[in-house]
Length: 391
Figure 1 (cartoon, rainbow, N blue to C red):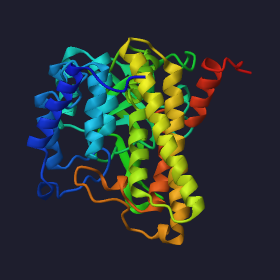
Figure 2: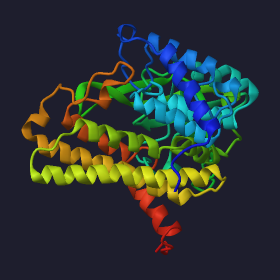
Figure 3: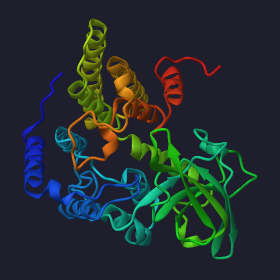
C-alpha cells in the first residue's frame, strides 16, 4: 500500500496550509465560546465566512457552495491539516455537514439561495429534527405529522435530542405526511424556522453538568409551514434521510482516527496494565488509519463500499470509547474532578474536546450513537460483509 499522494494533491495541501498560516484567527480574538452545536460566536462566523469565500469550507463542494470541486483525496488532506492543528471545522456541524448538504442535494435553486448558502456562510445556524421519544434510531417510526392545507402544512408532534435547537435559526424536520402509507413511505422533510408560532424548544442538561445545554426537546403545536419549505418531493423523506446520513458518514472515520491520535497524545500510562491499554490504543489508532486509507483508495477509484464504511464507523467509535474508559480508570478518582482539562486549550476547538477524563468518557458514548448506532453497524456488517441471514 502506498500512503503518499501525487504532486497535485500535495500542491492542494500546500495551498491550504498557506491559507491557514495567513488567516487563522488569533487566540485573543476567539474569546467568546460556543454555547451549543448551533451557536456560532461572532469571531467564528467571520472565520467560517472567510473559508467559504476562499473555497476552503467544504472543498468537495462547487465554488458556489464554499468549495473547489475537490476530489476525495484533496478532501482527505484538507481534513488532515485541520486535525494536525486541532482545528474544529465548524461550530454548527449538523447545520454544515447534514442540513446544508441535504439542501444542496434535494433543494431547489431558490432554497439554495434562501437557506443553504446562508448556513454555509455562517449567517444562519441549523439543527436536525429526526429523533423522537419513541423513534430514536428507528426514523421510520416517527409520529410527528404534517397535514397539507392549501399552500401550507400544519405540523404537530414532538422531537427529542435535537442538538442545538434552542440556538438554531431553522430545523430540518422529518414529518409524516401520509399516515396510511408503510412506515418507510409517507415521510416528508420541512425546513422550519424556529421563530414560527407554535414551536417550543426546551434545552436538556446532560450528565456532564447543568450548564451543558445542547440536547433539546422540541414540540410543534399547530405550526404553520409554507409549502415552499418542503425539501425534496412529497412523501419521499426516506430518500432525503438516507442522503442526510450519507453526508454525515462521508469520511466520518477520520474524526475517530483524530480522536484516537489525541488520546495517544493526552493519556500517559502509569502501571504496567495502563501501558498495555496504551499499546492497544496506539495499535487501534494505526489500524483505523490503515483500514481508512484502504477505503479511501477504493473511493478514489470510484468504488462504493457501504459495508466498509460501517466497519470503520463501528471500529473507530468503539475504540475511542474503550480507550477513554481505560484512561479514566488509569487516572482513578482524580479523573472525576470537574471541571478540569486534559489537553492544552485551543481556542479553535469547543471545550468538550479536552475536558476532564470523566467527561471525555461520558461523551465518547455519543460517537457510538451519532451517525448510526453500533447496533445498526453490526447488523449491516453481519448481512453485507459476513453474509449472515436476517433471522
